[in-house]
Amino acid sequence: MRDTVLGRISLLLMAGALPAGALFAQAAAPATQAAAPETGPAAMALEQGEGRAVALQLAGDLVKSFVYRDQAAAYAAMLRNNAAAGRYDKGNREDLAKLITDDLQAVHKDGHLHVSVAEGNAGPGSGPRSEAAVPRNFPPLIQSAKTIAPGIGYIRFTAFMGREEELAAIRKWLAENRDAKTLIFDLRNHHGGGLDEMDVIFPYLFAERTPLVKMAVAKYIYDQGGYSAGDRPTIQTVIEGSQMVDTHSAIPGEDTPLRSAKVYLLVSNASASAAEHFALALKSTGRATLIGEATAGANHFGGSRPINEHFSVWMPVGRTYDIKTGKDWEGDGIAPDIAVDPAQGLVVALEKTGLSHDQAVALNALEVPAEPVHRDKLRSR
Image (cartoon, rainbow, N blue to C red; front, side, top):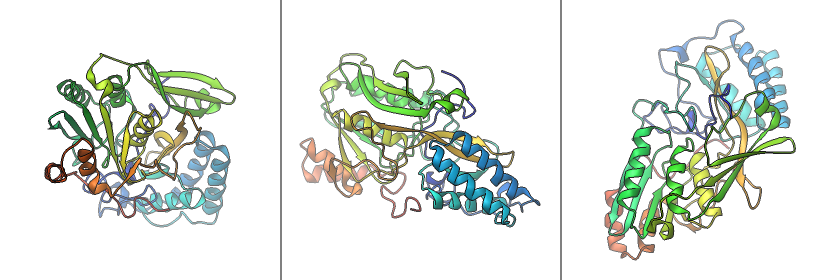
């Protein structure tokens, strides 16, 4: 596999879905950007012709790299028409990023595609094998990892960033809970990321090599260096017609009681991208029970790439889908097995383990997620 213009594949739902108080000022859709700051690159007024140049460059980039050629053509035609009409000639850079993003989403809604003002690092999540920088004030990537009650391991994530610190913490948690009868993965605040954390967890849950999901990208995008899942034993790549298709599999590790442990996943409409990959992998294989509400519906993977020195685009280049049905979750999310208010997800999971309602409520009160576990408006639709 190869390094790419996108760095490496990232499943992260970036920018618009980052938490309030983190890198961006509000948790919203990729179509809804944070308010422009009073100073800095985002607040700079557009230079003459700058907006038009950004739109035209992006139109070409979409035609070359977007996951669906027909949608790319529609995006490009819109951008070129709007640029010719002078729609992108006024305002500041943050205004332009928001306007173009809104225009893109009005043509075809996509849970990842958005334009941002480039301020140094393009953002978190450069890919599954990289140790991505965590934005300032971002909640801890692992908010909690413990034995929440005898025989019950509990862990709550913010994102899968592939950093060795978090990978080591997951290994430690799994080792400490190797005899647990139940594992609870709390993905209600999970914004996405890469595959490294999954490839640490899955070996404990499966007794034999198990195909989980497939990831497909057009062969012409692959051939131009627009995609790579990285060189890892859990990925097998084949050519299927005009597509390059990766199968992501679980490879069994040490034989521990966790292979037969009950597994619960807590999900919400804020569980996005790599969290959804994780959820589909365990739901489709029957290895876990999902508790909560339908997930965010941000499927198409890709990464952040520059448009020019002042703007970047999060470019979706492929899709992840269910091996059994061929369906992905873009726009729809992944439905839970047990539908409940996500705020009560941990209570329900603990009750399923045999704890009383009062015990479950008391333990839930000690686990306060860093962000709301349900968003009234995750993104503009």
